Amino acid sequence: MTGRPANVPEDLPLARGHLLLVGTGSFSVTLLPTWALLLRRWYGTTVRACLTWSATRLVAPDALAAATRSPVAGPGFGTGAGTVEHQELALWADLVVVAPATAAFVGKCAHGISDSLALSVVTSTTAPVVIAPAFAEAASGKPSVRRNVALLAEDGYTVVGPRDGTSVHTDQVGPGAMADLGAILRAARDLL
Image (cartoon, rainbow, N blue to C red; front, side, top):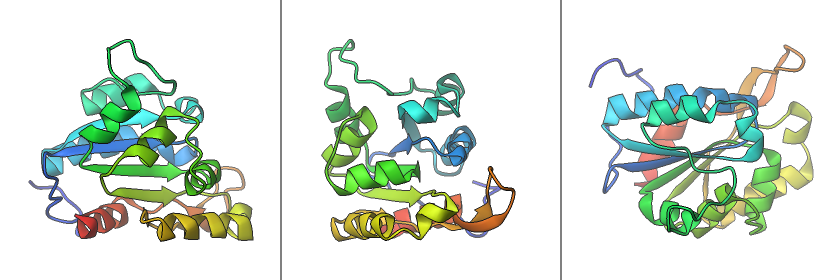
């Protein structure tokens, strides 16, 4: 397929073509509808999405549903379809990409606290998980945040470190911005 930037891998070898995007409440979550469209176009991937409560304040679930061509899971648990939703998503996914991952999500995930649908999916899946943190500049340097990121890596999650970016709050460039889609996809391809 054409139109792919040079830093984006040519292939993404998913066994069944299933990719789950998990979005949390960082401003970068607004990129997910566009990313879903690109993933479908570039790789022919079936994309589903799961959002946390805070993510739904920043990106419209209806926009993400249109981009994925699938209902968005979350933010709450639902068994109305006759399934245990976090288990169904965990088994469905060939790859889970958490982008962006807030410090709260990273901390809870690092300590096995699965008190939301998104966290329950990530901690329940046997599929590879790529986590792309997006932190406020001050949070990026906190020892507790760094320890949590290190714990995720120790536990087998692939963490794609943040990069410099423009703060929504200060308009200043600094560390903590979510990695770009190319870096995330390269890390994912290396896992698969």
